[in-house]
Amino acid sequence: MTGEAHVKIGFIPLVDAAALLIATHKGFAKAEGLDVELIREVSWANVRDKLAIGRFDAAHLLAPMAVASTLGLGHVRVPLIAPINLAMNGNAIAVSTALHAELAAESEVAHPAQTARALAKLVARRRAEGREPLTFGMTFPFSMHNYQLRFWMAEGGIDPDEDLRLIVLPPPYMVENLARGQLDGFCVGAPWSSVAVDAGVGVILHFGCEIFARAPEKVLALRESVADDDPNLVAALLRALHKGAAFVDDPQNLDEVSQMLSRPEYVGVDAEIIRRVLTGHLRIKAREERADADYLIISKDGAMRPDPWQAEWIYAQMLRWGQTRYSSEMADRAKGVLRPDLFDAAIDRAHSQREIGAFAGPSLDGRNYADYLEGFAIGQRV
Amino acid sequence: MRASDIRELKIVIVDESPIRSLILQEGLREAGFTQVERIGEMHNLLKQIYAIDPDVILIDLENPSRDTLEQMFQVSRAVRRPIAMFVDQSDADSIQASVDAGVSAYIVDGLKKERIKSILDLCVSRFKAFSKLQDDLERAKSDLEERKTIERAKGILMKAKKLSEEDAYKLMRGAAMRENKKIIEIARSVITAAEMFK
Image (cartoon, rainbow over all chains, first blue to last red; front, side):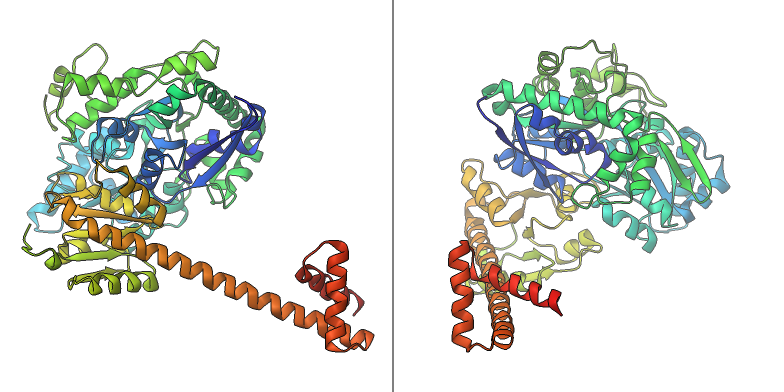
């Protein structure tokens, strides 16, 4: 690279874009010779399209969306690569205060297995009474939110395609719809569940990490061709993001990071809410808090290093919910999206990764897709 | 496809801007499309769309509800007719042109793409026309503001230095030339200074 490279990066205003936003704002990108232009977007479809046609050089993207784009699911096939994870977890399942009361009348609401079974009872009762099915919101078909909701419900015996409605809604509209009674629950990224709790219309039932311990949530995605054409640029970007993430994760910087992210051009919500998200201390309803250090993981335990098995696991979720049919070629293509080789080349460090981990069901580790999917009562088979 | 003639296609415009959708609606009607409806309220968007049951959906890219439409690609109970995004895979220009113009098109799966190409082209040109109109308006507005500011500064000078209107203007123009600034900048300084002396 000669001189400063101008890099356009699209993002959606969410706390899990922290590493990217801070890397740019605090000058880590500049120190790597990058002149980053951040472009705030309103929809994932926009991010995908602008990345695809080259209006963006890189983007903060849902990890399953990078896989879907590479496989040509739901859209034209645009091969993407993800050389770094921007976040693990960070989502939460929230329900309306009314639904929460109904669930609590049914059973304890501590463990996801309990709440899923209670939800299944309510679903059956509604059907018997001839009432409208429950409606849950999520943010995109190819998202961890979708897979978390489905996985959780299916453990209770609910078929999410038959027994209730799952709809896509932009996160800012979720809270409003919950308040109006148009929505009974949702799974979204931070800070939106906290916004619902603060508004007094929702209760956080589960953190995403209670469903999957360590789920690949967001990546930085680039077109495959960009990575091939300019490996130095990719390496510089990865180093900048890595430094940005370290800054975010340093407890000393908590106030500064929360203030910065709360700016309208970044996430645009109250700094106090962002602070709670970053520390994993969430208010789950009035006068009740829950804390989990894994609520949102930015760089802890080598989380930024992408691993092909994360893509395999995402592909397995796509198979389970009928978003695609199995082919060994597609499976390989999916696996190739996550690129630890690029990460290792740029960031010289030893890294550990753990299994994704779910509250129920078999592990994909050491199993083929067919065996894994056989292990679930609900969902498609290979 | 139900419509035998392309003009019988049912088109829905999802756009919160009433003026832009009016411009587009008019264009489509002029081109002979008679069944054009607008959804301006995003509440219960899918329900509204199913009620109209369109062949073509047009949405502006500033609309966060675009992701809601993406759900219609999925095969599930919530979706009645599979929808595809309008992209001509052989022609990357079409998606580029529409993204740059700020509009996206979705069509009922199976609809012949070449047949609706004209709709997208029309959309792109009307969206461009709208943003030009907006730019022109903005420019006209700021021109007007500038003229008002200069008038005010002129008035201040005329009163303070007992100058004619022409001389007051010349004084500002002279200062602008000397300081290599725009006359509007000088006018703003005059107003600021006058306020300080109040």
